Length: 264
Image (cartoon, rainbow, N blue to C red; front, side, top):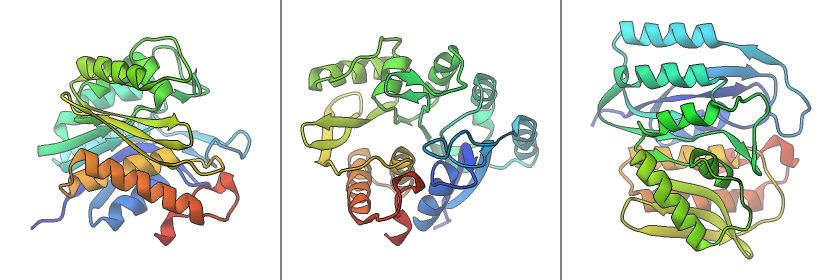
């Protein structure tokens, strides 16, 4: 059997684990040949190291897409994360079909914000462009903030299962993608919901103390890799939830550095 190939399109932080520095080792460890396309370069991730140095690589981004297209480069899976601008999203959405092999899986992690707010530097039209990209996906993995932004809803906290089901239905109607909402807390548990257009499943594990940057990127990377390996969405999410829980228990470094996932 030929080796699966994939492309991950997201930011690259030189220090602190997130985005491509998590996607590359995790997806590669699953036996998948991963190509990468940075959307922006940062000196550190944005979760505890102050304001990072930022290198605009948009010209490189666009020219790389042209080069891939010229050379007929194709992938069995495409996984997107943080984009530096709405323009980048719009251009990639226009070009994505040039790089999809037959039956390719597209997973979009619609990185927009957290705790009810857009991330710094993102414009108000960012969610509109991201929704267009989500409509081209097979699977999307928003957190609760992002799910509400994509639906055009005002941010609410303490959402119950009925609220999550309602959000999932709206997102599915908007995108026709399998909807995985992350960061769902229920008393002393945390996990995700999975809605495939027919039924919803909640997958939780015991909540651990601490807040670690990059857990969402680890989650999406594992789900994407397992889907490419042939797992069901439910099994892929369960794998990701359990892996992150186990890794948090064993992580002893400073929280801002990220989870010590490499050991597992």
